[in-house]
Length: 276
Length: 334
Image (cartoon, rainbow over all chains, first blue to last red; front, side, top):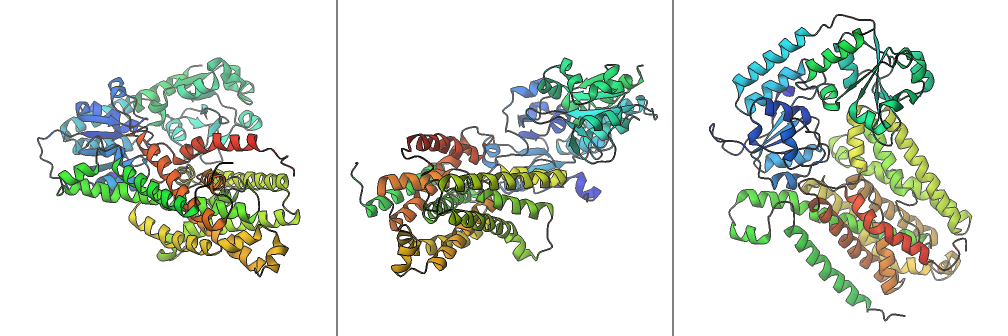
């Protein structure tokens, strides 16, 4: 059940404070993709705080961190005296965002779907909100140009995406995951078929899926204990990817954040898949 | 032995303490929004709005939930004649959590009025089922402590496993909704929620207080209580229902918050003795104090972010529990 496109595009909950066009905003940016786009539009100096998933660009790390985007604190955010909260629609709890809006802060929700077409929509919503429509158009055009430059014709390469976050068993991405969307968008095939979301790696399942390429994020590699340990994951050594040691390690947000780095990530993935 | 303060004095003292804590907590927050600022800018609508709709409901909710957790803990320790009975230790909270997970993953088409209460109803039913199960087990073995605790641990593990299965089949959205709720937080505080909580917890707590004398007589043993004119089965059933309701409401609103139900009644018992007529009201006040302090710390220590309040109570309660266990002289198998 997806909300209708119009509702998805922009959800301005309320606007109680009169905002003059010239005034600079005090922006709290929630979501790594949102923050990245705000900075790319040149509105970075209006950002006063970010959530813990916002790590790009580097300058953002100096800003106060309001915590994990699914565990927001209404008073904490208000204490920073924001005039605008730009948030991915995936942020929680919804009640906190409602409370912010009721306290006179403009809250704008940015679409969070994991498709390539969502990125221009994100840019449009954010650009309109921070009054940089022209820069937004240019950014969208540049993104679409970069995207079309990537060859996405079907290629019979099976990719296995593994996620491993501290202490948990490694998980493989099935359908309806951000990783599946990236793999398909690059014209490749997700090795794991027949289940949705993430499932624990099983030795036989991994061998049967016969991936040609292993795709994994930098954070996951770190929590596994280095890339040398990758091939000791269940069954992996016995797959084509394991035998040929074919792996692509990508930054977490670049791969799963569906932000501006998407075309570059797709190109990398494509390059890794085409190497033989 | 230390001299014991007179119980009415203790209640008065705790009331004063709670009032002070409420004032301090309402004065504290990530936002510098003290009574002084409210006084200086009496017409600043925004400050008032934030204070009235964000901070105040949260402070009051902490008081009410803390009260419910501590009273149910005290009742269960009395009912099981067992100092280690605690809703989160015996799997009663996780029973409630399991049923809330069921409601989230398999939502029923309920009319809106019931829908508002549906999480609480589910938590109540879940808590009650586990409570009845534990009660049956504890009765069959005449209060064998280790058996009861092991059964509780097993039930806890079972409920957690069932919750795991549910989260395995749930959608992303449901999983997020659920894991957020499981962490234990009072961030869902708003006036409608508070009014629902008070409308259920206050009557349940008052009805429990009315059973205090009978709960005292039950300490002598079922038979003795019966000879002293207590309708044992009826009293026990009433108390079970009431404490399941108290835990259910608390779990439904704020997730699983541990240790309040265990620590507070113990502290009160050490100072005042085991008379439930004083133990119950003092536990209620003490529980309110503990949760209020924990939640105030949880929302201010790492501001502008926030910590799960369950973490805070466990951090305060955990070491105390350990000390309690190490201090216990009699063999646990007694």
